[in-house]
Each structure stands twice: as C-alpha cells, then as structure tokens.
Image (cartoon, rainbow over all chains, first blue to last red; front, top):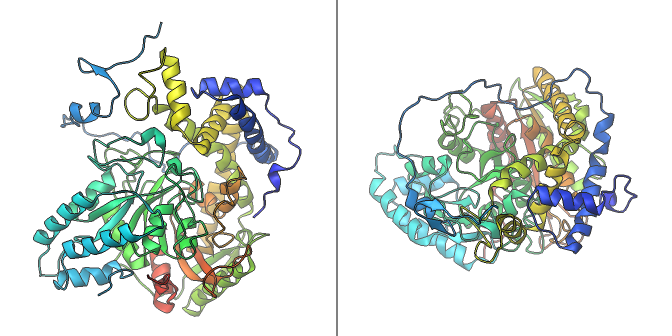
Length: 105
Length: 495
C-alpha cells in the first residue's frame, strides 16, 4: 500500500484562512492545532484528485443518479407517523411541544 | 453442541426439526458475544433478543415452511435505526441517541422473526476502511487480533468471522462490505444501488449507499437478499424491479457463462499471494465451464479520485443535520448563542475523520470550486458508468480481487488520509456505477508486513461484480464456486 502521497510537495496548499472559513461554513469549531492539521490533510486530498482535471469529459453529462428513475411518486394518503413523545425524548430541551433553541439575534 | 459457524440453511433445519429452540440459540450466541474480546459490538440487546426469540419459538411451526430467517440470531451494523434502541453510528455525537423508528430493512427482518443480538461497531459514520475511526475503539480481526478486520462494516465482519452471529447486516458506500468480508474471510453482498431501502440507515453518501449483508455462504446471502430487497415508498431511489426468489433460482451450472477478467484490477503493489489465490479461483470458474474473457476498464484508475470528491461532498450535506438541537450530543446548556451550539456540539461530537470529510466536502462544493471539483468528478463518473455498461455487453460477470492486500496491522491506516481510497480502489468503481457485487473467500496468503498466527496466512477474497440488477448472476457464480471449494468453511480456531 502506498503512503507516498503525504510526503511529496503539495502545490495546492490551502491557507489557514481558507480552512477557518470552511470550518465556519461547516459549523465546526476548530482549535489552532486542528486548523494546521486539516490545512495539510485537505491539501493532500486536493492534490490527490488533481489528476481528474486532465481527463477529457467534453460532451459528457454528469452523473446525478444511477437508477434511471424519474418522478417517483407515492399515493397521497394519511398514515400514522412516529409519536411526538418518542421523537422529543432525544431532544436536549423543549418547551410547549417545540425544540428550544438559543436566541438568534 | 456447537452452533457457531453453522450456515443459516443448517440452522434453519435444526430449528424446523425442533432440535434446538430460538431461545437456546439466542442464549448461545449472546454468551459468545459476552465472552468475545473482538470489540465487535457497541450495544448488546439481550432483553429484546430473548423476547424476540421467545416470539419466534411460538411462531415456528413444524411443517418446514418457516421464513428463512425466523428464529435465527443476527447482528446489525450500528447505522441501522432500531426502534427504542441506542443507535450511535460509532460517533460520540449520537452516543445517547435512541432511534424512534425502525429502518425498513430492520422492519422486514422483524416481520420474518429474525432475532437481533445487538448493534455492531464500525468506522465512525462509516468513514473509514479499517474500523479504527470508531469512537468506541477499533474492532479486531477474528483471525489475528493485532490486525484490522477491514471497514467500515468492521464489527459485522468480526461478529460473523468470529462466530458471534451467524449473519449480520452491513452497508457499503465504497467498499465497506466487500473489503471487510474479504479481510475477515466471509461472504459479503453489496447490492445494486436501490435494491434495498436506505430508509432508517444513517446516511453517508446518498448516491452510493447500499444496504447489504455478510454471512458464511452465498446461498445464505441469497436468502437474506430476498428478505431485505424491494421497493420502499420511504426511499424513492429503490428500484421498481420485482425481487426474484434468488435462493430458489440458484444455479451452479456455469457452462456458457462469460466471466470478464479486468486487466486493470491486478494492480501494481498488489500482494503476490492475493493475486495467486484470485487467479486460482478464476481458473476454478473456467474448470466449471465458464469462458474467461480479458477485458479493459481503463478508467478504473479514476474511481478513487472521483470518490474522494463525491463522497465527502455528500457527507458534508448529510452530516449537516447533527446540530445539537434535536438529538445527539449538545452544548446547549453552556453555549452563549445558537452559532456556538452548532459549532461546539459538532466540534465535540464528530471524530477526526468525520470532520475531515465534512471540511473537504464543504470546500469542493463551495462557491468557485463546484465546477472544478464536484461537477468534473460527476462527469468522470459518467465515463466509469459507461465503461461498465460496455463491458457487460460482452460478459455476464467480472471476477477479480476484492482487495489489493490481506488484512494490515491495526494502526497502519491512521497516518495516511488516503488509506481508504487506496484500500478500496477495486471496490469504488463498481459503487460509483451502482453495481451489485460479492466477495467470497478464496484461500489464504501471507501478509507482506510481518507474521500472523496461522501458518497459512490471512483470508483472501474473490470479487464478483455483476451488471445493474444482476444479483442472480453473481449469486449463481458465488454459489457454484462454493459448491466446488471449501474456503468459505474455514474459520478461525474457536476458543
């Protein structure tokens, strides 16, 4: 098994700012150490996939699904759903039958 | 009397003849689970199992017409929602999550009086190929406890290989059934995408996720497939194609069958012993009447690259739901605002691999990069889909290795963020095209990285890939191969 990809020079090194920005978009708090770690690891992955850019895909339609199914519908009828109490059991906090969240503004 | 390593067909006979009851069988396997140190299970559902077994015993009649899975214990990968049961995905973010409903496949097994022993360990959110990204510690290989069982269905593979459960559910996005089945010396079925409902199975890559199973024989897998397959209103990607009676239609006659041997699946760096065992197995198919055809799949080399973009992209979308508000790990009490609830709950809850995939996916889908990465990858994926379609005009099935090497030492995957893409490179192209495949044991080979307890070495798997909806074809080939060989009857020495 090759492990060589990690040690080579990485031409697509992400900046720390880019990693911080992505982490914000993904809603994950990262420590300074993690930012550096993912800066390297993400760059390794991006470098790994670089070869794809050279593949000729002129005129090809991208694959969005493989089943070939189109407009799958079901009968519109009322069925019993999961019970609210069962679902709310997993919630950290609720009030009057609603999930409770922190103030947004 | 020993019941471990009996096939479902053999257990069925014993239950039908009343040689043993489901309760006795269930107690027997629960006892083995408790004594095992493979770390194959995250949660053992003893109480439910015994209640389910008692119900099965009431139901099982003596007329021999009992459902194939009735009264037989099984294990479920901990991605499958089971009502009232802890369902963790091997992540701390779901450590306390109790599923409020059953996955469709679990419902179907329940309706057939299958008896759930517990939930098996896995790579966290199925992100990994070694079992080591689990928040509950790595699972050990049943043949050599210093080695990985493969992943992500690590616990299911070790539970079956270690004789803790006669069969187990598993899932595959890009190798997670075939690779651990191969490294653990058991039979694994990765279905056609859409053959089995994904409803209630914690999502990873929704255009790829396939719900399958592991057992000791292809005959057993065919019987399991009949139960798990079928259209489901709750998963609109399930196919409308009728489910054949796979097990009754099993045909071990390979005369006239064309078996493609893809040149690109015998790659540089592959272990010599793996190559030898697989070539012997392929020649065995020829001896049974199959015609071998060398075929080319030149875009195979792009499979892992496409996957390295498509999978994290879908992961980043699917894992957005873990927000610390509705369920799962949360910092709700201590956080100062909503943003902190999200960011801190996710920081504490997700493991390293989940974070890496979410961040990679978020990057390649973000403004300015979507066309260059995601769209480009999905176009190259078209090349792979087309290439398989062309090859299946010439041959009935493809036969090749399941993995490039036998089980590696625990720890070998941790340092390389590309480990999975390399380990699964012979599985990923078929996943991208939604094809069905099997891995069946085909002998043993010595590892290239040191010694192992058995002189024979470690299990090698033969991969059989079929065309879309071609389950019957791959089952027939696997069935024929297992009629002619006994590699699937080899098991680790039972303590």
